[in-house]
Each structure stands twice: as C-alpha cells, then as structure tokens.
Length: 162
Length: 162
DNA sequence: AACTAATTGTTATATTATTACATCAGAACT
DNA sequence: AGTTCTGATGTAATAATATAACAATTAGTT
Ligand SMILES: [Zn+2]
Ligand SMILES: [Zn+2]
Ligand SMILES: [Zn+2]
Ligand SMILES: [Zn+2]
Image: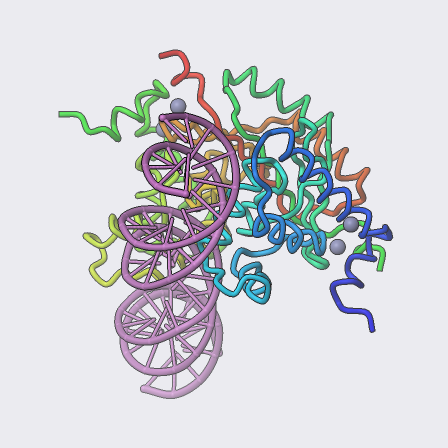
C-alpha cells in the first residue's frame, strides 16, 4: 500500500530515492570537506526533511524524530536545524515557519522558492534572470544584501493541470 | 530631547509627518471607498505602526496600544493586523514576524522589501524589472502565483555610508 | 423597535522558539 | 593513563508568537 507521502512525491514524476541519495551523499561530503560533524541526530533530521519536497514544521520533525531518539526535545530539533541551515543543506521557509531540503547545496545559489498551496511542495529554482534584476535593483538602492529570499505562494503546474 | 525613534526616522532625511499623514489619509479614504470600517482600534494600530519605518512586532504593538485601549489583548492586535493586511495598508514581514506600513497602499503593487539589519528600517520598492523577470520565471514554471514576497536582509545605503 | 452583521471583550490554549545549565564523548596534550 | 578542551547532546523551564471559541456590544438595516 502506497502512503500519502509517497503519492505526493510522485506528483513531481521523478525518482525521489535519487533526490534523497543525492542530498544525503552531498551533505556527508560537504561536512567532511568542511570538517564539521554530520552527527547521527543531524543526519536523521536531514533524512526526515527529505522524506518529501514539502516544507516540514519543527515540531512535526520532533514527533517524527522521537521514535529514533527517545530523548528528543525542542532544542534537539532546533539545534539540528540551525546546523543544517548554516551548512546550506536546508532552507527555512519564512512564510511557513517550516523547513525544506536544499536541492543545490554546495553550489552558490540564491533561492526562489515556489510554494504550492495545494500539494504543499516547495520547488527551488535558480531563476538567474530574476536574481540578475534583483542585483541591479539592490545596486541602485545602495543596499548591501546578506540574504535574499523570494517566496512565492500559489498553485504549482502539476496541481493546476488537474 | 530627541528620542531614538525620531532620530532613526531622520536617517531617511525626509519629513516623516508627511509619510504619516499621507498613509493615514489614504487609509481612511480607501476604507471609505470600500465600505469597510477603519475603527478607532484599527486606526490606532495603523498609527502606531507608522510611528517609524521599522517593522514592529505584534506584542510590541500590544504594549503600545494598551495605554490607549486598556482592554487590549493579543486578539485585539491580531484582528487589527489582519484587517490592515487585507486592506493592503500594511505588510507582514515574514522573516521578522513583524509588520510595517505600506507606502503604496491603494496602488496595485508587488513588494520588494529591503530590511536593514542596523537601523531596522524597511524600504519598500516597486522594482519593476525584478517583478517582470519574476513573472517570466513563474510563467515558465507554470506556477500561478497568489502572493509574491521578496525580503532582502542587509545594510541600507544610509547605514553603510556611516 | 427589531433584526442582522460586524466588531470587540474575554479567556484559554496552541504553536513556535530560545535560554541556561548539566552531562557526555571525543580529540589533543602532558 | 590522566587532564583538559571542545563540540554535541540532555534536560527543564520559559519566552515569543498566534489562534480558537464564545459572549457582549455596536453599527447598519428594515
Ligand atoms: Zn524528490
Ligand atoms: Zn502543487
Ligand atoms: Zn517616513
Ligand atoms: Zn540602515
């Protein structure tokens, strides 16, 4: 029997196992290179986040982590999330207070996040034209940007074709 | 003696009283046209938000409203904020869980918010080139956007020139 | 006045996140 | 081996943000 989560993954019509493998392998490799520890807890949280392309809430992660880490508390999750964000392995979706795996960790990348209201999946796009225009605008404004987050809410192509 | 808040407003080197008058007058006019009520509480909250160009937190607003409305509770503030957002009179700054007056209420506008880490002021810009590129990107992705929020954190021109 | 819808009062609670301090495990040093 | 240092985790408490539910009041309408 196929779970709801698995179905949702398939709406992208892609091999999600590949997504997960790539993400986890890349994470491990980046942490090695950087001399930081992808500990068991951090790896487990990253894996849980990567179970789908949906943004996940911290306390939902906590619930899902507890079977694996009986002692898990809010701080456990938030520490792991802080680490994963610092290392660029996940994104925080500000408008949802939720977290989603980064699909281009390692590469320098700005984020354009397309957040579907129906399937709740988050698509991350390079959107180089947008970012170029943005850089130009920032330059004109004399604004020195540290972080650039573009979060668009709406209906994804897949959902609107149904 | 000049308060810190007043000083901060002056960093824009503009007549903030004009900002406030324009914002409040426009708000009143729009509400009239739309047949919705800009009640005392809503007007007071909007005025408090407009005391500066900084984003303000809900519970800070609550503290500042209480001298005017002894019975004010969280719900009081959140209801007023909901109304003001619906009417496009303020923006919610997702990445700060805070609120800032909209400088172009009434006009159709997408928002590019430049959020300064030093002076905490929020600058709202039309950024038409960015928005054009964004629309193009969304079209390519087949994504039907309902809300577009671009929040950039960094150092504003004024602060970086000090 | 009577009715209706919108707004506000009030209480409780849900959700999201951080702080502080104790403990533990591994690496580095003596 | 013992000591020390560091980073990570355990644990408890609490802070900060936001919503739900229902009662009371007010503003418009008939
Ligand atoms: Zn996938
Ligand atoms: Zn969708
Ligand atoms: Zn001003
Ligand atoms: Zn500034």
